[in-house]
Length: 264
Image (cartoon, rainbow, N blue to C red; front, side, top):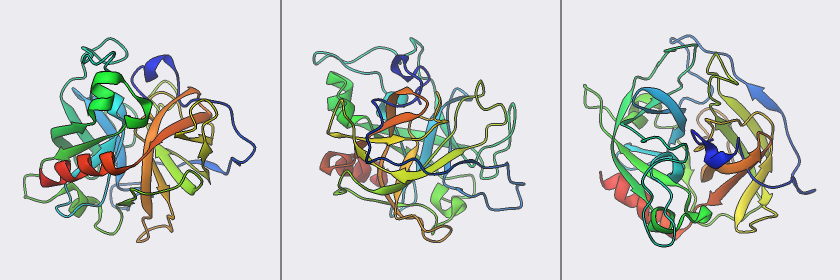
């Protein structure tokens, strides 16, 4: 979740009867010569430190990464922009390490990608609306001129879905911070979404293990494994425990941000 997860540890509301918890798997660190299970998902870093989770989303130029808005922009209130992140710290210079793993500085099998621009809805930056807690980031090409999607795999990034309903089978992948995850391994859960009891406009799942650091984790519907990346319907936003997670469902406003990010 967030660096401070807005005072919480992973996602909001109680589990509804319609949400069944499927298997939660922590994937072991793959040697650099192997393709990781989720090559497009990784750690969003601020000034070189684990900040949140982010993932590559399919785009024409292969240069777009998605995460939660609260990971990259202070929450606004009463129409006024916020000044600092939820933990009271400056957000810092952002970069993205797809398929990151390993203790300490860890391994970055696909390199470290500099974020060049951040695109966030003003419903978040002025009003702090949870239903706008998503952000699309433009990342710079590497030294060889390649895009992040080209390096992590053109057939691995999910396609964004702007018209999804609230009930979908999804796979959610995130990186808890080192306090709960000293080897920096991603945690994954496949389950069914439902409406959040506290805010029916938000998505909800019940899966343990999504501690601080997993904010921005992609919610991927229709995933069929390598080469069948599925459709991205939202990213992890918040929660009251590590086992209850919420996400803002992508909509037309999310699409507008994505298109701005894709133009670079």
